[in-house]
Length: 110
Image (cartoon, rainbow, N blue to C red; front, top):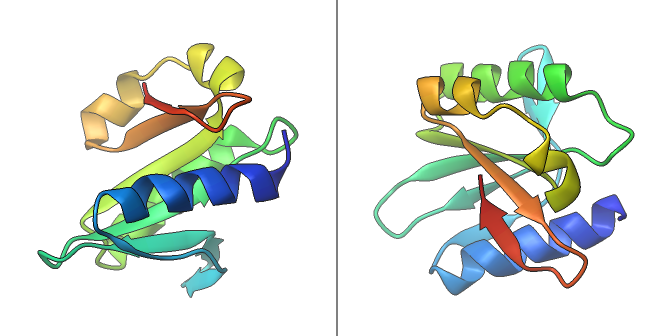
């Protein structure tokens, strides 16, 4: 599953919920995130997308840095198969979200 496919799926997901979504590299200190979703209530969600070839541990660091830079929530998006193999404890502990995308573009929160 390509990064472009994951980007389209997560953008569609957040737009359906009324968020304004920008999927482009956003520089935050020593790192970058892949995009953001801005809610009508002022919520700022950092979006980090990881394909099957990307480093998930690096993604966790990117989520932490996004919170340090003022985002109210952080989301890691990957394939559904990969999301199923990740222990979601760290996501629950920090209040982050883990989304898995299947081959049809359907998103499940893990």
